[in-house]
Length: 192
Ligand code: GLN
Image (cartoon, rainbow, N blue to C red; front, side):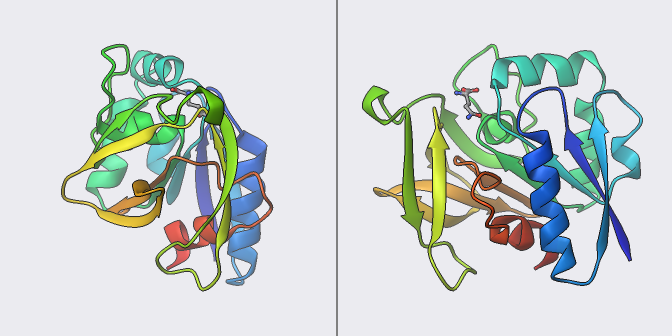
């Protein structure tokens, strides 16, 4: 089977996510067609979606301007998987704590942008993640803090803060799972 994976390509690590989803699919004997999403009309053809990092204010503005936002909401309403990372997580949240980010309300969480603190602008941490046997080396880059979780499952925490959550078909991480060559988070989001 060939999976059609849409990567929101208005900003962020598009090729790294494409590689991660391809390598996750390979271990399941599946092929992947990667579609870069920059305009409306493509999301409805995708089986799974990736919302990469970047700048959440910019991503939010573009998906609303281009008419992509309602298509992403419909994709999730039809129970299709999404992996939202870092700025993608902020855009997918119920509340981003910043009026410049018009969120998609796909994850029942509130977030605080750039809230891990200046000395921790970027850091790596070995996380134990629900559903993974061994720790996942997570790369955090100006990452959001998940400040409250409503009706969603916490998959991982770092220093007592949730950093990976699942709400129905949507998995969100405050870190960048596409940067280490370890595709287990993509696997968890799309093939488990
Ligand atoms: N700091 C960015 C924001 O608030 C997110 C950073 C990232 O995606 N690495 O939108």
